[in-house]
Length: 220
Image 1: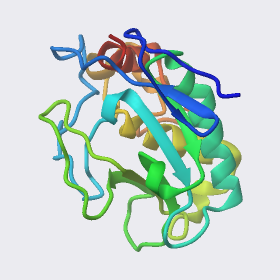
Image 2: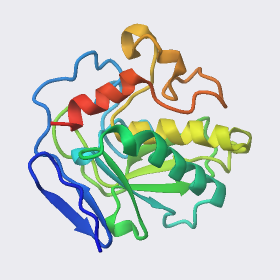
Image 3: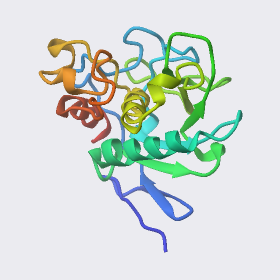
């Protein structure tokens, strides 16, 4: 029997045995202190590896694996862990992470790549997808999380390293940008996985400030 998750306006969508709530609408203004949140903070929402989008309606479906082959098992495990333990609990009704077994249903595709570039991972719009909405709420679906583990294996060689990278890339799909300093991302900015200079094996989650940015937008 399917389990239903109801939004604040009593509307839900059922997919197989999983149901995720939809929002009644986006917040009308920029979230308070949103220095590290929103689309197009430093780059447009597009299919470039520097793309900056948000999640449609705050509901992030993900698909582990993509056209070029199955995602490495350890990356799949640690990506599931960060979705389930960091992002899905943010709000039990309006921010959700649900795994699907086929790409056509998913809002986020997670894949391995092997590209000779400095970046170890990135998030962008899928090829051929046109972004919708206006900044700072511009979104695309699906988004692609690309782990460049083929070119940077040392950055993916332990569970905590993988969890840190997964935490940051998932954060990007929700609209979180890199944490730069206290004025940009709150007093604990250097504890967040969104902090680029953070420890490779220690910054495994987001901060209260980061969670507030997501809740201020996605929770009516």
